[in-house]
Image 1 (cartoon, rainbow, N blue to C red):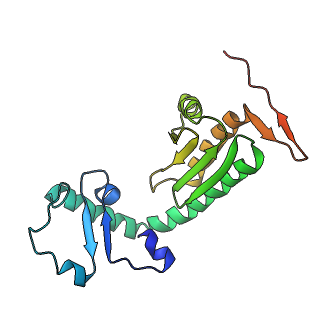
Image 2 (cartoon, rainbow, N blue to C red):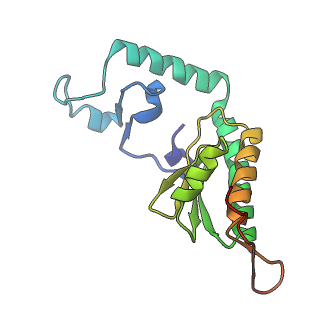
Length: 180
């Protein structure tokens, strides 16, 4: 359920929020008993805690995650996404590095990312850009391999307009298609 579990670490305190109530404002503060007992009821404030609707949605969301084994899907599809991104790094000069875990992935580019985001949107695919040259992938848990494939087809097309790594030494330039 939490990334720290992948590393064999148990933190004393964990703060969680965004996905907890499927987009409704809700946060939670989890602490080991020795730390939790130091805080009495009403001693801490919260902006996004305790609303009955958001709490009920959170309980339902967590039940769905467990019943539908969504975390296994996240691991499987996230690994597939990362493999596809690594392939882009191997094949396209404009793609420098991929990094991430599960369905949180980033693709470091040698070119500005925003034009790629805009062109992909025109093709019906939504990417996000951060730090000027990073494409960020943060899709919902329901993402499937077929969705990754569509995104990669569009991304390959857009990266191919810039440069492509040759199988031999050096880089071969691929001309951009003529503007419409």
